[in-house]
Image (cartoon, rainbow over all chains, first blue to last red; front, side, top):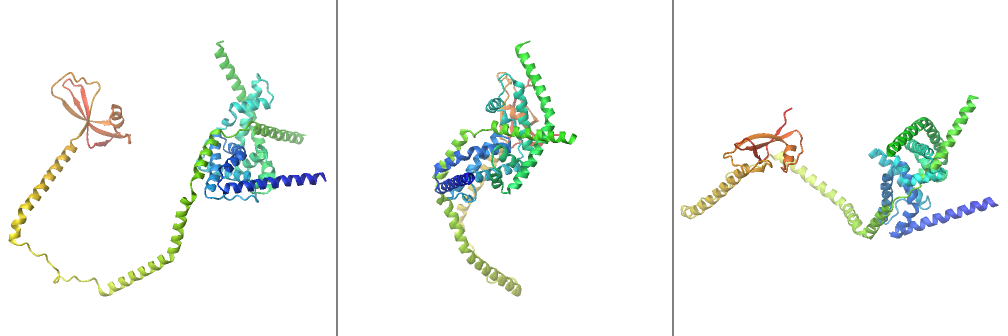
Length: 235
Length: 220
């Protein structure tokens, strides 16, 4: 009884979402500028984060996020909403589909060398990391280890084959369900599950391989920090 | 025993990856910059205010017109091809058309009394034409001897040494550029012929570039 109610409630909320998506689509068709801005506000974060993890660069992610919304803008200009169908999927899925295609195109055409550090070397990320790891202010070593591990993980994600990377980003980093991911990637849930399993195995192997390098790097970095500190103090 | 250990290690690794993925998700909770929003707002207000009918209609009309014209165009093309074929067959059967020299018309000769009237006018015209020709050749001569001259900054114009000597030198484009000549240094291995004016003391006074530029390839 309780479960059926939960299921019904979930379906209701889904219908609500679909109707709001349909409503938004109608407003977009009428070339409503506010509708476009509300679409941007609703889905900018998920599109941007997906592209950030796919490209490994904040700048590239911003450029591509703009392109995603420009595609919608061009469709609105022509009085359509592209190929979006509210009965088949959500706006988020549609936008992520565009983002996925753009990211693939970017990688294929530009072969851009990206710096992964840019994602994790911002002051905000450092502050968040410190907060999340419950690290005390003076404990630099733990912070450095955590950061190095995260950088290694990001690199490993970027080195994954495209279909594995998409699955990891959507399921693990964007917290999408297998069902939603399957809809976005246009494959079955089973395929998503197997891709996730395989991707995690590859990531674990890569992390195992990079573990000694990380400890060496930390030691080196720590030594360097100590050296610079001594130089600064003049001792 | 070793199998159990390896399984435990694998599980540990997998859980570590899960933990790190969670951490990465939390750390990378970023939003696009406000500049992007501003750009999109500007784009939207600009793009959505434009009238799409102006942009789409002519193209659509053009396509429609083309579609309606295509059968007519095809028929016309067939007719033209037919005529061309008929003409070729006809010309092969009858040979090339003959020119009748007997019926060719000739211009009537100028009568002697008219010649007297025409002669001074013709001479005037001829004189004008010759003047123009002379002016043109002088201009061409001027352009051929035109030079771009630059006094060298270290030459002291106060010291008059009498006669100057000019020697021809070849200089690289970058050298000329550094001296201040407005030269587009495109090819690095090309040198340009320049004239160096020397004073009697042997010091260079000026560099001039005879125009048009004479370019020579650098010897290796």
